[in-house]
Length: 598
Ligand SMILES: [Zn+2]
Image 1 (cartoon, rainbow, N blue to C red):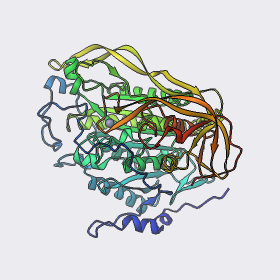
Image 2 (image 1 turned 60 degrees about the vertical axis):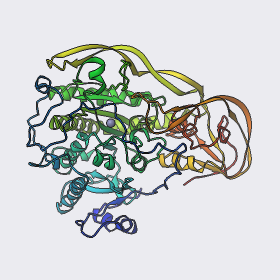
Image 3 (image 1 turned 120 degrees about the vertical axis):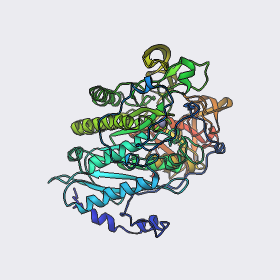
Image 4 (image 1 turned 135 degrees about the vertical axis):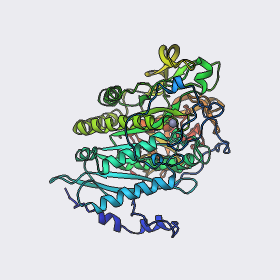
């Protein structure tokens, strides 16, 4: 095995890609540390038809109460959207956080420019400090409005015998990687502030020693345009956190790039949930829990990964939060429709980061703090909640580093080994049940038990089940679909020869066009085709130049999610694949030669 001597200055000298990235930087910006460029920037796929609806400020479920307080200086008293009895339930923790937002006299949250300066500063400090972790800036492209998308890679010192691997220009010790992502939704700022704290503590502080066992990628602001506009969606109105299979936005592609290149064993996604909004109208209640938690809940997530998420991560987080005087519950949401009193756990569709990352066989965990729609109220407590949860997950990952590596190896093999056998759940839904939730009485601030109709995502109810194919065939017209699959890391082969494949064709037997549904209600970004198909046995006459997507690979279930046509997130339903006759299920491995698509 080749062992490279890691030298972070080598990274800084690397070369043309950095120059290209800096070409648009104006001269009056402070000098920037050289970012690491990740490899294989996959060209932006063609726009999806039907095109996303034009940008209209999307109405989040959390329609804030009139008179929503703007983020204020931490020095100013905060106007509250609810009375003092409720506010008194959420005292600030006795901690001192040093992000720009908490600086004395600072107005509003940490800006994009301030965030960049913080990240660059951490890289510079690490370079001047002779010892301690390596901190490298990862350049992931730019947002729709041209803001650099940036993450930090933290790696520990190389012990004798630690092997390394190259990820783009970066030298990465061969340790399991944890990816932390925040602020995919621009109006949910606490996660971003918390990841600044985490980055500070990894660079030089109490989390530093964890880097002897794990690498950590910190991506504090996945939607900087939304952050600047203080709105949920990206600049073109697409919800970044519903875009991880389709990859219509540069923001989602940047995240896909991180996941593909680093193959993290754990991904944590930090959000904030609405505290008032529809809950006030439906239940006359304010939400109580400091944190809501959920892992990946979509068909195809390996059961052992789910078990690890529960036992190694969610349970320790619940315990750590409780020890810090913070409450938690399963993640839930509700639609804006007042007559709909159902409360749902996070969805079962393969579109969110939580679910798509789960289909890469990573332990994928969502942490939401009570924050959307209340401005900067209780900000320190919200940030503290994220800091405790994230630190606990990092600590657990470091202690379980060896187990996580073994788990990943096992499930990667297990998933790949299922090709051509058994069944595949194409679509599943949540299981309806009932749950008692504790909310807060808005007048008295007292706990208010509420029994709700509850859609549980923990028990998936299969809706469509088919035989698991060996792979999928795609016609030579489907280059755009292939590009997206490659961007996700799915292996695709171009067939070199004409030939026959035994398989099944899709016959469309009905279709309707609907607004894209979600557990939060319809998403205001265009429509999807809901198609009904019949699968018909066929001997497929395939041409050289068409594609084969084998399921003998660890990302097989991601391919299933994208390619079975009759689900709302499929490439067919969203216009990436033009015709159901351009794809087919392959039931016996092809005999003809093929070339992997780069
Ligand atoms: Zn969110």
